[in-house]
Length: 105
Length: 122
View (cartoon, each protein chain N blue to C red):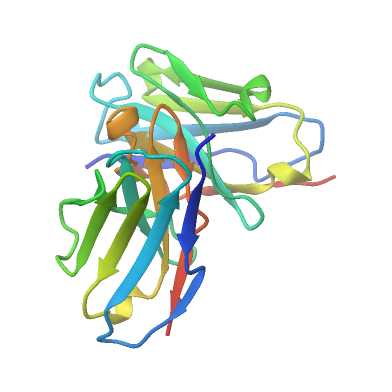
């Protein structure tokens, strides 16, 4: 079974910082990866799919890269609304999520 | 833009069956372009996919839950339902209804319901 490992689990940052979150797959998954943002008490929202395709309406400060086993989500110039938890997801015949990365002030 | 709304009891007794309904507005559960699924989230288990159903009624289940889960589509009501039997405290979670354009590369969730907290307790 494929496993997704996100790092770090927690990240402290400041407004304006560049932030990078990593998601590693235990086996190669091509570009079949998505990223989500979840605010406290809310459902996740889709940021990126196919590893690097920005969902409509998502600010361009979010970007995704990678293929195979290592993927990154980058937020350039962190904004106050970006303090949240971020999840990666393997796209397959089943939906598998990573453990999450909480971005804190 | 579709709106997904979960509904059902917020408290279920151990060993009983959890039942939730997702009502879709602004979209159709019979739309062949999409799959409709259930995902749950708890502090101990994170985000866990339960299963999904296609417009044709084909279901895809998380192997770890398959023996206890039934997902159905009710086209006339534009609803998706979830039944999880023989629940325990480990099934306490927020349950989300979700839409995804497909499987494999299309298995990203582009719309989520707001979530329904279900607590399993006597």
